Length: 351
Image (tube, rainbow, N blue to C red; front, side, top):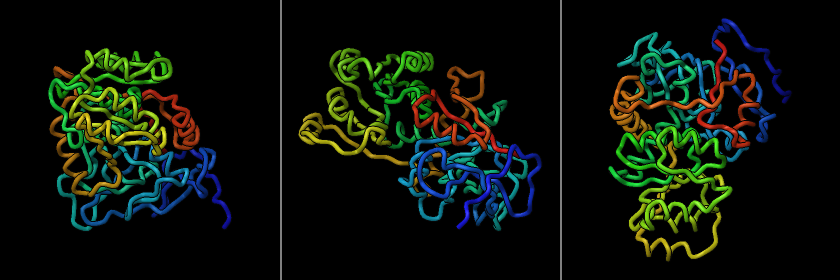
């Protein structure tokens, strides 16, 4: 099979019937394998909405999928992109429901966001906060819903609890800091540079520790007067397990949602966990059921989304690290792969 020709963009007014441009890779591998391809425009099914995409964003799952290590769930688009922002332009055969043509929306997806059009369940859409740009809004759906899910649906966060957030300057990390404050909890973070720690503290982190230069476990115990933290949001995994358990409070919840530091571990994990009556909970969002995601979107829309509008006592702010045109997606992936980003890496989609 001949490789597809790289199409020149930016493109103005691309409207070939039934076709669209999307990020693509033929062979799993590095960021250099990504290119822009003309593919079929999706058709919305029953209960779905067709969205013309203005902006999307990157997630660690996209990097794993590009490497051939994270296949989309059954029935999901095999295109990259777990979120999108744009305009409603069509509906499935059952009509519009609560959305109308021209509505500007944010979409939580299982795939397909890095393209000019995407389809999404009507229940997985949220309105863009008043006055917010498309590039800022693109930093919300996956990261903020993941953080909200980890804290409320999985971690069962309570007012006054202390939450340790690894990768505190990531998209999920910057969201989790702010959501902890909204819930009346106390966030503390780890990050790999002074600059990232300063940003986390500016967003509301009560303390921050450079995991490259200090023992975050000892620092957490010092911060909590040797009591430990109530919840750990962990996207690192195996390489942190001993330190995580060391600084976990009695009856604490250790929520694992990523394995940047690998999944294999050696040592006496279970006896130490048992002694602390601790819980390890694994959580992914992409593979959850449509109803679960609908419930999550509804809860987030009611409890958090209003706080993105300026003027309230607590103002939530999506953090955008950088914005790339879609044709520069390989550069965007490289930036995330090198852990250079603070907040979300956003993609602008050609109209």
